[in-house]
Length: 124
Image (cartoon, rainbow, N blue to C red; front, side):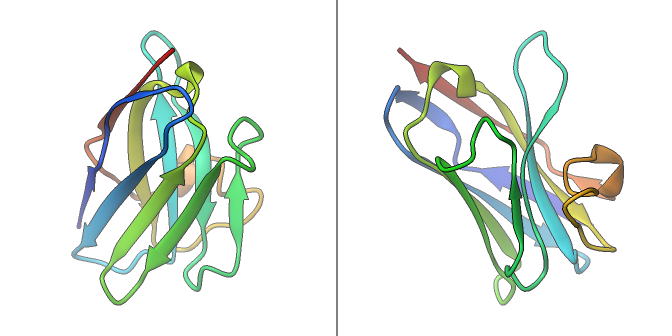
C-alpha cells in the first residue's frame, strides 16, 4: 500500500491551497490528514469516512479546512482556506483500513499507512 501526498507550497497568509493524496494498493475506509510543525509533535488536522458522509476536524482548522475524497480515483483532498502562519507544517495523509470515527479519527494509531508528507509554508 502506498500514499502519496502533493500540493504543498509557499503561500501568503489568507491564501488557499489544496493538498492531494493518492492511495494505491488497498482500500482505506478512513482517511486523515495530520501535520507536524518544526520542533513540534504531529497533530491531527482532519479525517473522513469512506462515503464522505462524516468528517472530523481539529478545532484549529474547523471552518477553514475541508476534507473530501474521490473513491473512484482513490484520492483524498484537503482544501485549506484563509491560511495562517500557524498552519506552516509538513502535512501527512494517512489511511485506516478499518475506518475512522469521531474518537478514532484524531488518534494517529488508528491509521495503517502514511504518506511521505508535503510542506506547506504560510508567510505573514
